[in-house]
Length: 275
Length: 81
Image 1: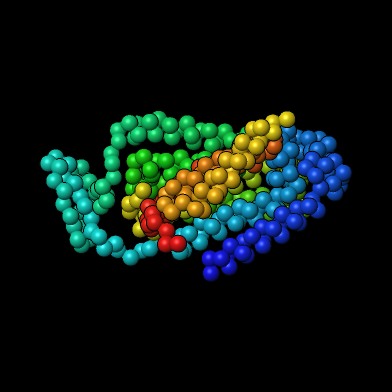
Image 2: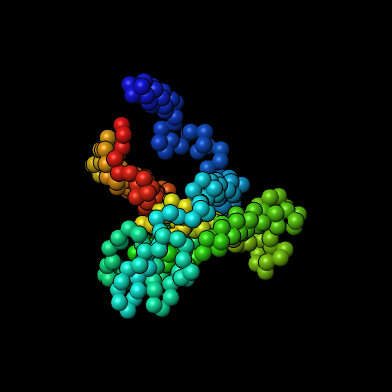
């Protein structure tokens, strides 16, 4: 079976390599892609959309329909993770509370009446997690700057490399860093599961909503220039604003989905403790 | 022009890719996969595709490595084959 798998892999890889012979050379100016569409994007995009970063112009304006469904794919990944892993069954390994004044550890086998954390009792993980003062302090200082950088990446998507996907992933990574450096409960109480689900939906709907808004104003789906009727800017710069809008939608959706996937995997769907 | 850097990074890409599928410890596989993503990110940056490099660095080398480590934490470190 192993050799059969190896044979299939080598066969497919060889076929793919053989097919690449038909590709035009890298950067060939006479290849079909460089003769029909790319010259228009390269010469006209800045005049048409007022966006200096051509990648963003292609991604969020000329091919925004494509990008919308990429966002939907990300959303579906988070949804699948939630549906497969999320478990509402009460966990069986019990609850450990530490009595803070004395340091005594108490093990409850049944769901107790003690709330999650009081001033005298705190819930601790069943598996021992090393406590590190240096890591906690450094992460506490670092996380706001990571989030600020994420917002910068989203907001400057049309001027510099970056955009909604990257900014959203960086923002989600800051939540994951909070969960790793403190513990999962801290991250879940700061950013609740319900809020993450709602944010993921809002991000996708915000993106699609901009497209529908363009249709209501009489244009095609994602024809941002029609937004000039309601926004007080000229019809060229309004396309840059439309791109910024969809990037924000992508960023919100990706941020929420990254946090949903991490929390569900790290806690095996229990949302109580994890990595 | 940068063919020496290109060759060096391409070699590292292949080494980390072969390492990631042949190492038996799944935690090492996750880390090697992160290294592989980072080398791919450098390659994209050399080719001038900075947007793709940025995505590869944040998604491939950053978040997906954490997802793999979390999955290993909840399952097992040893593979069966």
